[in-house]
Figure 1 (spheres, rainbow, N blue to C red):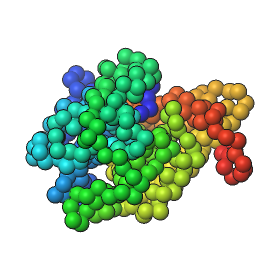
Figure 2: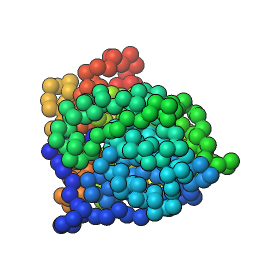
Figure 3: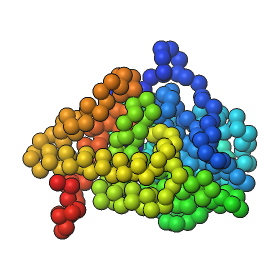
Length: 331
């Protein structure tokens, strides 16, 4: 979860927040659900994978749960019908609704990376940490995180298959970098790879692909390795949490690699010289948003703020070991 503590989303247009959008079929048996963080369209997505044992990928924030449950109901899913819920990582804009969704679908297994599992069972530390970072925005925008019963939680191993039907499974791809508890899912039937935040953020209304490098555990080396792992799987598309299905996945992955290296290079140059990393990143990349209306810039700043990215890159730069191989440096 990356954001800017002073920004707050508004509804699209004046007045009341927009109502829930219907699910959109974006691939064979894949329905995109707009979880409408803060009433904004096309900012946070979940995905329903259809089959004998349907699985939901991402719940969105706790504040999004009413919208999400209404969408699932409109698709005909009753309380006994959802077999699984997967979160790509435990940041609250992806997993904040897990406890509520688990309660609404008592048969669903909750799948999560090993390093995130204990925080779903007991979210106290995670929520306390988020409260320190986000202040009043935690409750006004994201909500919190209800615990999930430990017996409902299944730790995903790298390469493990989540069965959906005899001809379909979701393959777990351990993909740290954005966060140490990040896992992607590769759909064996459609070929779509559900990438969470590991590829970055590309909001349709802003148009630019930005890396997502938040604290506390962003790691450039791991993030680049995860992008390579995705490319090796030759997906047919990349489904981002922020936001939507992107075609030409190998081109997008190459762009994500280059963009991440570029941001890290600027950050490292500023960091080494004692300059302000956030200001350097803003100066270097603000022009990417030329022509984007302010309302859409604000969406991007909430989900992927320069200050959050700068904080994550600075933390990585200050804690990483000195690269033994010059090729590991971004300078």
